Image 1 (cartoon, helix red, strand yellow):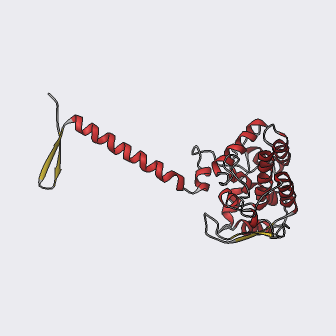
Image 2 (cartoon, one colour):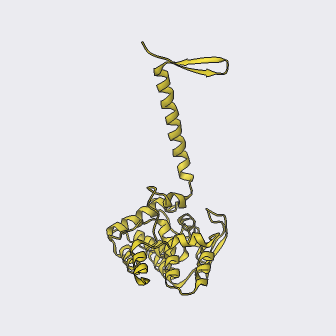
Image 3 (tube, one colour):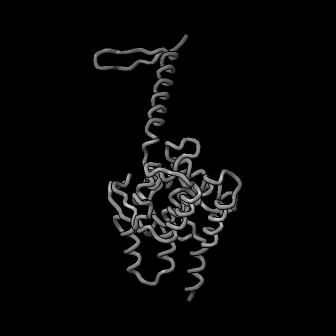
Length: 254
């Protein structure tokens, strides 16, 4: 004989059969799963990257040699030339802008070029997606040279075009996920052992700026450049790996 479960709802007692109880349990589980699927795309991309697999925060690219190897990889890999140069330009531009991937992929050609086709001196991010802050970043020589190669490869483009369009759907920009996969494939192809993500490109230049500096005021400048609310967040960006920590302890042995 099947047992039944009773629930007291105020003055009325509702009795469920085991079969009905199981069915209600499945419906609640499906509702929870559906809610999670809807909510996931609007989660902050920094959170998604930082806690991807829970224990694998994205790393800066600590080796200057690896940065050059990645540049060469994008320029020389087999594939459609426009996509190769686009990915190379995105890589170099992101390293130097130190902005979040979502903000960079939201740029159009008119954000980079003046109406006469000359480069703007600065790139203006009017409303950063995470913070809502406005930032103005110098379009330095490294970024400008990469974009010059990119525009020359494209040949024809409109000012209203996305700066980094989707190769299959040019009317849409590349997605953050697409760029993350591209970077992870490159790191794997070159056997670079790190937790690579789009946020790695935001972290890399600050890491090297502070690592090579002997002026503590530079740390404040880097924090201001990244628009961090406090210096501790910047320190998180330059977290040392185990080998660097070992070398530091060895140097300062007593």
